[in-house]
Image 1 (spheres, rainbow, N blue to C red):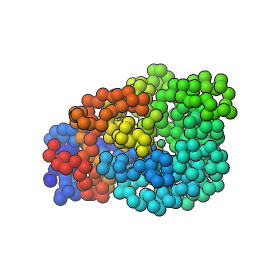
Image 2: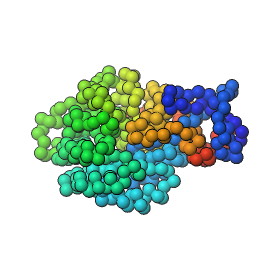
Image 3: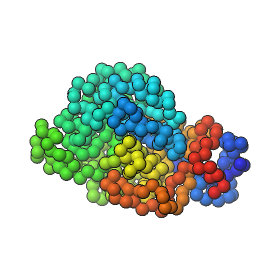
Image 4: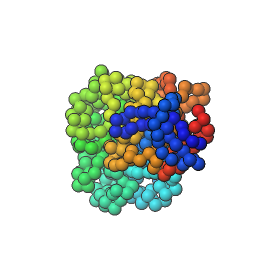
Length: 390
Ligand SMILES: [Zn+2]
């Protein structure tokens, strides 16, 4: 196989430069300087999908981690709260070991996790003692933090309470929260005010314009109708963060895309990108109801952000260095011989996955991110055989 000229990603400078990669019998044998043109072949630390749902069987949304894992260039899938303290052991012992792709997880603050889409409606399911015990027993293994969902359709009349309880638990545990914010109530403003340094807002480009438009009032009878008229916007029209988000960001709160079936508005994202916002993780929120219809997978989601005006270096950082830092995965980007993704940029073709946002508004890409191989512990596994021949 010999040497191949490639664009190699440097996670520190977040930029690509040309190198030769040497391969010996389909094993990694080092890098060297090159005078050859690397063309459209790229190599980066292993991709991370920082928000997906990979607990089929005991959650209402789950898919196999391998469906969105190594065969799409993704080395690590982070499950965003599919399991709670009552369902986590089964996930750890009987589901995760069946995957070839590495998995880590956030523990839902509800003990039933996503067995249903309304896990907080019975308030007894928010059992802090059980959540904290589960987290302590599994800290530094599978579990990275606490997941809480804080949008009207999910919390129903529980309002801000699940988020308050998640913060209470995370304060005691000294861990981070991944908070799903979308349509209210509770308002995004109230939710963001509770988030602390290192906590993550997922669905950051959800773009739901206001509470009234996105929620059937009859579902939340305990809340005053006047509340529905409140604006619920994270971003100003020019793409800059609105005041409550700006305050959260300056405290060290972090952003995650979490594309999903209802949470990614390309116009909100592109105006934020135009306004200079680049520090967020690109993730899919892949689950059974969006994977084949809207989201596709992480490469398709990366392609969308390229089309919205980010550079390939910025998009790469958003699936490697940025999520690694957000989730405390120290050293993730340090050794490319351990885990790397090789991909190419190519022109769109007929038959490619159709690109759209969660509102089904289409996105036109000039370049498609196409993973061709993964490198795992020194060994190359092809996704598209013959990739090295161009
Ligand atoms: Zn999700």
